[in-house]
Image (cartoon, rainbow, N blue to C red; front, top):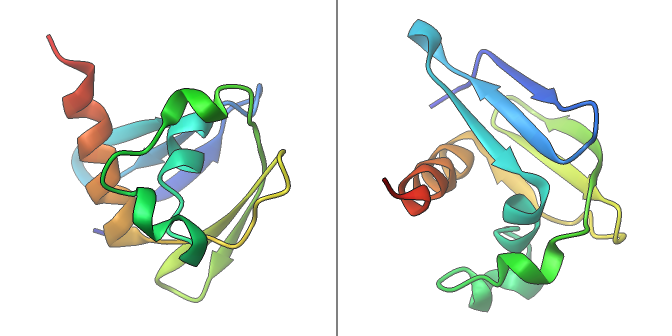
Length: 100
């Protein structure tokens, strides 16, 4: 699902991703860092340790073609490329994990 916009919060602790019809996802920097789709993190995607990255902020977001963004984090990590579909998929996990 291709977003209409992606905005970095002023405190650099979250991204707001807006979609059609007013729906949106808010993903924390620690969540995004734990779920980075980089090669070295592939084995951790089934059970990422979000708390391990609690102090990590988002430094920069770069568009990659028409299909993804690269996110640079304050801990120096910047090799993960987040496709639109992957962002939406983990965004739904994030919302589900919040619970009632």
